[in-house]
Image (cartoon, rainbow, N blue to C red; front, side, top):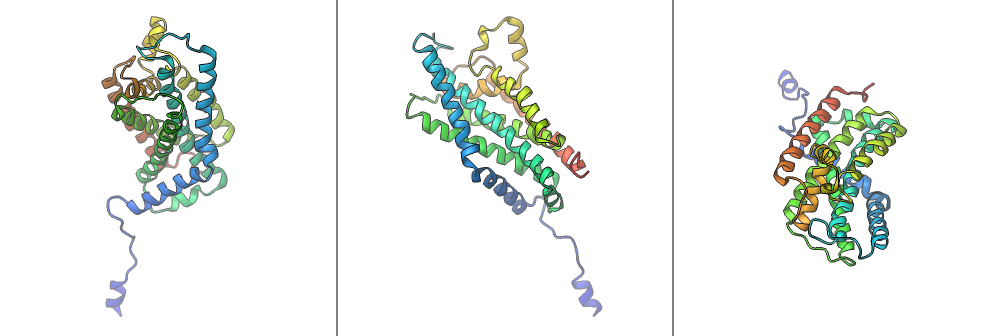
Length: 270
């Protein structure tokens, strides 16, 4: 009897260093969450980018001079695309945490056999996936109407990943912090969207006054958009190599902050 008790003594379940099954399950849940409402999460941003492109094309016609040595429409398209996938990456992770808190199912996530590192990674990676889907579908759709040429797809891929990862981590941090949808909308409308709009999406920063160019050199959104555009047109306003280092550092920092906040249960467990 004693031998049986020792043999079947309850112990904590072991998953190894990383619970890959749990990470995959949470990631799949997050991806399905935005695919269920694909009209809002995928088709909506693509339609918005299309309307911007159509209105600006009709407004300027063929009169607009080349920018960075390429036609303005070719310059504009990557910027509009970056605007959409960056804001959607931020929206996904922030809404995931906030909806969990509002609906009360955040406690299911807290009680799951997933570490803070695994939870943050899965949700941020789902944000990146949402950005990738938007980018790919948008390129395929607009290729029907525009002569889209990709100079170096690897740079576009890397900057898309870094930009959406950074915004996904930032959205996770905001999702931990806010308690109401009104608060989240305020941060999105008054911080994220202005930064995206004023970071070279529609124009080259070489046209800005010198002091604004200097400010742009420290703006991570500028490097996200500029680096992503470089992959399409082969021209950039800023340093591509510095942008890679800068954004990689910011990704690690924001992910670490998100990890710490979730691990401590900041405004989650209360």
